[in-house]
Image 1 (cartoon, rainbow, N blue to C red):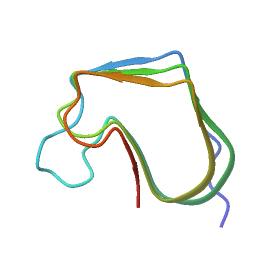
Image 2 (image 1 turned 120 degrees about the vertical axis):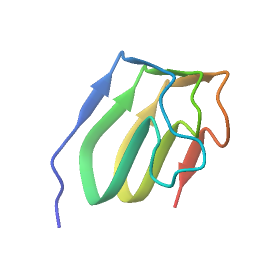
Image 3 (image 1 turned 45 degrees about the vertical axis):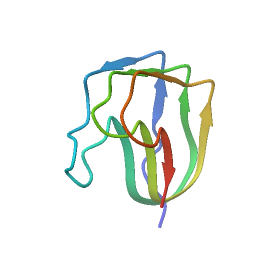
Image 4 (image 1 turned 45 degrees about the horizontal axis):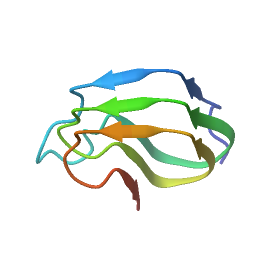
Length: 79
């Protein structure tokens, strides 16, 4: 299975995520499997209510030069 390529760069996410609700994260790749060529870089997640960058059953995604500030829970979460 090959997923749609995604390029997320230079975005600020503020007050995203829903605390205590599974799957409600600011940036969440969910069952993308082989997402070769997808890029998440130079982004900011600020004041997240639950986690920041989540990869769930997704592979070959470049995560580079991202930051998080004042966020709740794990910032980088792989499952």
